[in-house]
Image (tube, rainbow, N blue to C red; front, side, top):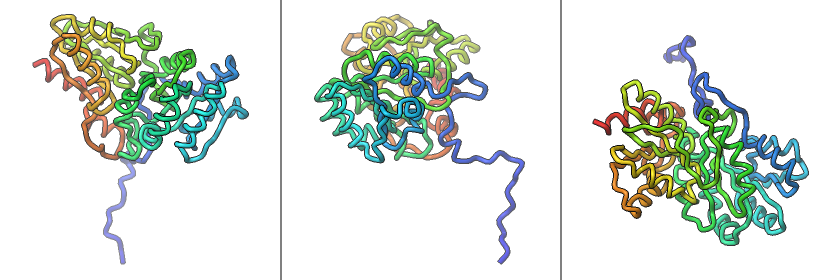
Amino acid sequence: MKSTRPAPDLSKPRLTTSAMIASIASEGQRTRPAPFGHALVELARRRLDVLGMTADLGKYTDLHIFAKEFPERYYQMGMAEQLLFGAASGLAAEGFMPFATTYAVFASRRAYDFIHQTIAEEDRNVKIVCALPGLTSGYGPSHQAAEDLALMRAMPNMTVIDPCDAHEIEQVVPAMAAHQGPVYMRLLRGQVPLVLDEYDYTFELGKAKLLRDGRDVLMISSGLMTMRALEAAKALSDDRVEVAVLHVPTIKPLDAETIRREAGRSGRLVVVAENHTVIGGLGEAVAGLLMRAGVHVPFRQIGLPDAFLDAGALPTLHDRYGISLSEVAKQVKAWLK
């Protein structure tokens, strides 16, 4: 039987699954390859106690770079995240410093109890580094870690970090090593944008940094949303809207002093932007902090909805859920009317 399906239009670009795992970098934006993998290698050259561990995701968490350089200090645990974190805890008890990598969904959901009981409760010196945070995968709820910050910041003894770009990740790795105790870091992998080097930025654990000032809006952000906030601030300046951007890479412990000071400056709308559900992340942490401190300001959130997100191409999803540059700028302008 002859098919009646029309022939494909080969003149149009074909959307493939690569768009579902595409880099978050804009076209033409400067990037740096695998900043975590290279930074961990540099750290391991100085510290013999550093180990690399993963659950079948070495290539997809940039740990393969460490494995090639230090094969005798690399542990591939297979598709068994509970085993990964249990073993990491045991190695930490013997004086090693494991950097254990997987996807954020697998650490925060599948292996949560093992992290809680064997790492956090025992205050073990394990560094948990997790790729595909928030909406950085188009593969749907099975791989979209929209609630990992809420889960991890609720865990006693756990330090939580959400870096913005390659420049920051390279600085976070040695800072994690210098901190005694468990750390959870969201990982941007592959070709990671370079943003913060233009702002003379230096990462300090537990510190928020004002990247630019502005009299109309204060955007408080973490992770890739700091990149979006800076882009939106530049776009809104064309409409004579002045936007300040306060980058908060450490979600726990929160830099209460800096957030109170900047949010307390009168006359500004405060907007928290995060690549995470609006439930339990940076937005609610900042809102609770300001309320307890008696700082009463106009307050809004940009974040992912309290819902299971769709699968699809990342650019489409970022527009749909309001975390693309155009949607962030549009929302801020609407709130100022």
